[in-house]
Length: 233
Image (cartoon, rainbow, N blue to C red; front, side, top):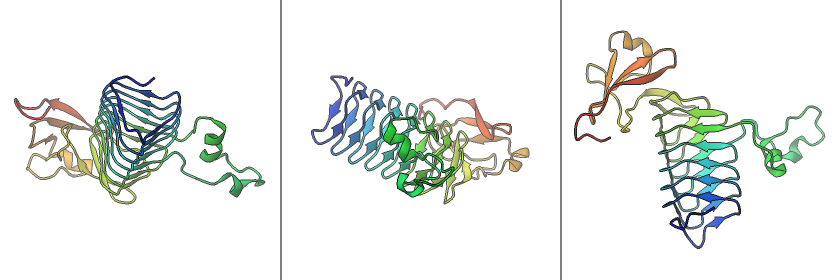
């Protein structure tokens, strides 16, 4: 069902059985395939591709040329930068390549053709950001408020609030819920390695004032204080 308040450009291709929420915009030449779900107040940019069955939450921004393939789930308030690619198969082969090969696995291309759900999934959690041109190789989970740097190639799960960059992507620091890099108690960018937190136990955002503590068991952060008054929410 397409909400009457949604704005869909005349050149966009939106197939049958697609849900588009109130206030959502789908720009020119975007493709949204059958069974996809896009929540309210979201954006699908020019030339973006949302594959069959993909689930997108509320307040999500999918920018120009981003590609979200079958099996991807995007939670609320996520940013997906221009040209980012969220894949669905770590070991891709065309059906022709493995035809007649004993014991060959059934790839994502076969599953998509037959309408089955792809087993390798990408989940992008609430409030996280995927930089321009980044590639997420399935299976992978991007944690809450994590940030994937532009051009990064993610091949493993990313913890909440982690900042990752490079190919393959590695954790290089930590980010606040407001998106800015967190600092240690000496005012330096918080390091990636948890050993440093034996001394610097608190991480702080110089922009909004939130404070965090490192959680070793989950290799993530927990918020200890909220933003200061009049700071970004």
